[in-house]
Image (cartoon, rainbow, N blue to C red; front, top):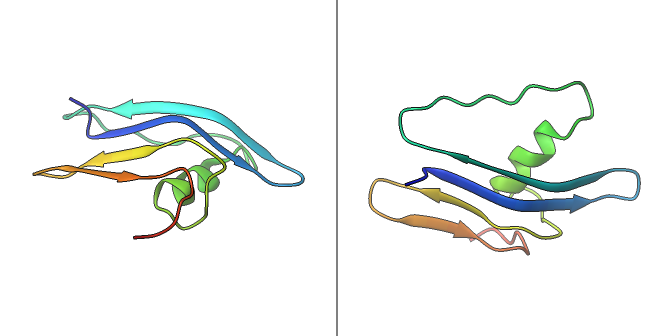
Length: 77
């Protein structure tokens, strides 16, 4: 069971592409994003939270009772 799952997340800008990012987080683990400036850490977080639209790829988070899923359009609920 994953608490967070991101599969093939993509975001394309004219000068930058976040290309097929995938990861999952299981209960009991701590995860951090490490990378140099411009690597896509903030873009990934914003796309996961629907603060920006994604080109493709779902992001799903499990709450205590159910899954919350966001679509490839990234439209906030």
